[in-house]
Length: 269
Image 1 (cartoon, one colour):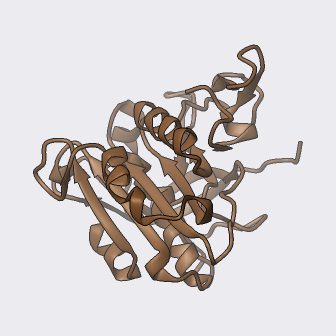
Image 2 (tube, one colour):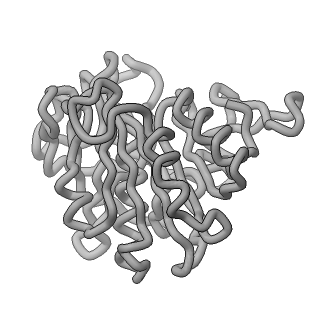
Image 3 (tube, helix red, strand yellow):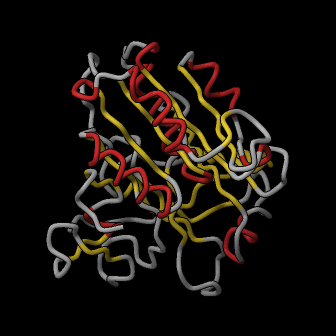
């Protein structure tokens, strides 16, 4: 295992995004890159300078500006750790390890890219969409399906629109965009896709990923999903984030070390 070092980075932004007040964009600089940062990678963040809370929190990279050396995470306040993180101010120092984990695959520019994001699964999907556009992928062949419980759970949609990709917002309650789940929106579009020339990625709550995986396997779509899981150590030592494989329930993988990106059909969700 490579030696992993913590870095004390400077907060340059920590602001609310969206309309319900629970989502934040945290940007920091002075991060010394030890390896390339790619969509799918995550960061391990220590939210205080003490041992309380003890464990770091894992956050997907939402954006990276290599010229300015600025990294961004987007998070939702759901517990004590993220609540503490939301109080960070510009100029504060924050202890970060990363980038960790593997990355999304690059299927080739001729493929239709379908990105499916649910809730706080938005950040890595946005980073992936931006990366595809910057690398010359045809914007007309990028479909971004983004779902939330209601309109207030859909954040930063203007950032997606500025990429010029095909955006389909979805809400469970029908308050904005397609009424229903992201898999329903994908099913509506499936007849317009050449499944043999389509690659799908997904990130979001496990029930969403399970439904997406079942649907993809049923119709013959290939792709990858990024799993969200508590990652106490972030480097595969504590075994706090293990998942069983689909072909062998007695074989386990570590989300933080073997993932968090896995092929569709690889992991039992």
